[in-house]
Image 1 (spheres, rainbow, N blue to C red):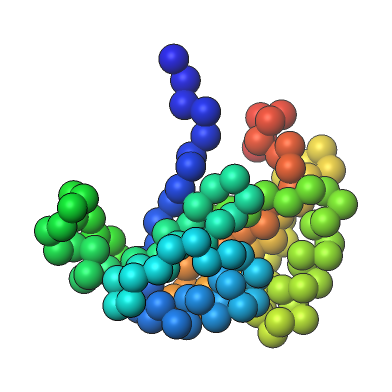
Image 2 (image 1 turned 60 degrees about the vertical axis):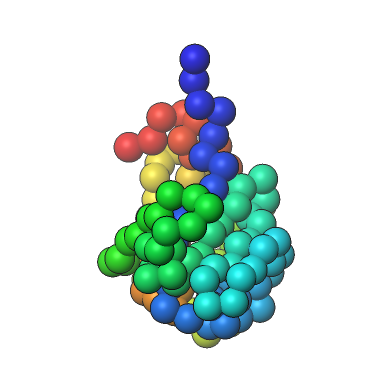
Length: 133
């Protein structure tokens, strides 16, 4: 048995409206769920990005409590032909690109941060299918 993919991932954020303005307003991700003062969920292709207020998600409820802190990392995959367009879009939005990395074999990625300083990366489709460095 093998896992098919990671369906969702979670970031803990300080301000839901700020996160909505960034992930929906700037990056164009569709909002698919929201509870004021608790969370906002976004569609990212076939995956889901969950953004929780840390303390709110720590409380007991219908689901097990969870909590996190610190700067986390996640990567968004884009088709090779869309990579340069995404890099230019991020720059045009006034979001600094911290670094671009050449993974070899024609695969690139670039890094930038969200308002909570989580490290975000855009990678080209197929990068990990061939192994990676």
